[in-house]
Image (cartoon, rainbow, N blue to C red; front, side, top):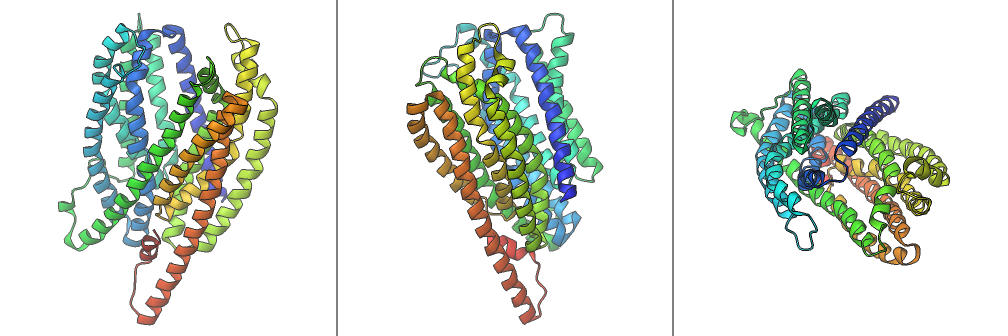
Length: 468
């Protein structure tokens, strides 16, 4: 428990440093480009790649880490490295295709019905989409490598490496005589390349190959076991992708429904998320990165009592820390907004609106962070399809509560709906995670009894696979 918390605090601190660096970069970008058409084109060209990477590559650790740790526990480090190499080899192929899709989709954004982009933004999009195609590939590779490093316990490298991207853009703007949008493109690509080199070095220093492994190079005696492990990764990966897509849709729904309200509602929704998003990003990164390898190890070793005790302690720890913090921040929501935003065109009237939105958004923090514990438990138990079901429920509940709350509370009702959705989601995840744990424990005991009766040795990973 102490080691887990130390790692979580270390990752949280590193993530906070990365977020602060990104904030400083945003200040430089705002001072240089303002809200001009060139910045619009750059950000628009990044929308699709960022979404695809978060869905396709960001969900890979949820599928790979439990299978990788089970393979390492039961078959040895060499077999686990073969599994990781085989997964990486397949991922590279998909990321190349994903880069092409991202580029083509980015081109189409400027011509969507109802688009109000000016001619200069439309003209800049094709070249920007083409130039940023390598970013999709590099960032996807970085996401896959970071997940593998986290599975190996190399949390520092995976958490701190993303600082290279905002640093690349900031340095480019600082040293360029006359910065343009292409300065940001070059800075982003250089920073992402530096991040990839950093992660590649970290992987090689741990004896892991970054080139991938072909199944033809696996000894015949191990090929069947490795093929079964790969199948488990695929089975868990697709539900994780579907769940991530559904959860991303809730944000799109909130922004779309905010546009139905009076002018300024979408902006108020955006400003109201700033403080809560920092808390949840830092907390979520610290929890999700450290929990998945630890929980996966307990599942692979069938240490069910330890898993239950860890869940109990973390549950009360998270509730005991997040609830008081949330109460304090909600109480001081108006002064926080006033300090952060009230200057220039941002008047006291905007402060009143945004502070209500921010207070409502902050209510989601306890449910969101506690839900991560159960999300990682479900992934460690290799039951990611339950996450897809939960994401679908969240989307339906979000739409329904948005309609109800926005009529009474305006734009703050959308934020309040989000907080309620995370509370419902946390309750669902807690119930299904505990039920899946009981099933896995029962099947593990049944498998052990069967082995004792027959006197035949059996790998303990079978119960984990069947529990999925």
